[in-house]
Length: 94
View 1 (spheres, rainbow, N blue to C red):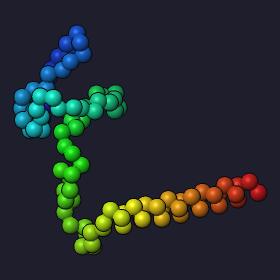
View 2 (cartoon, one colour; view 1 turned 90 degrees about the vertical axis):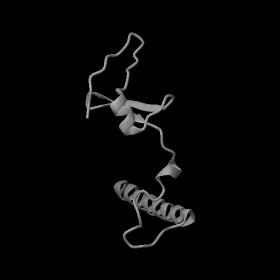
View 3 (spheres, helix red, strand yellow; view 1 turned 135 degrees about the vertical axis):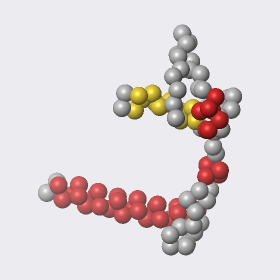
View 4 (cartoon, helix red, strand yellow; view 1 turned 180 degrees about the vertical axis):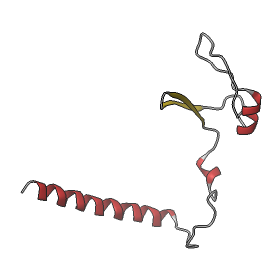
């Protein structure tokens, strides 16, 4: 889906109605705008993180983690990475 639009002197674009409808965009929707591979990319920020809960379904192993479990896993991984980087750095100085 796509359509042509024209930028105004103030740098504004009108998003065609069919695109707004498909993406459920409403007046006041904020966008993150960036350049990717020479193209303008505008990502609407019309969802809250909590809206995405359960989006991926049940984990493949059937086990759901608590926030505390996730935090612990991230901390353990960071600690392991720190040890690995320190070891590599020490060995490179020999």
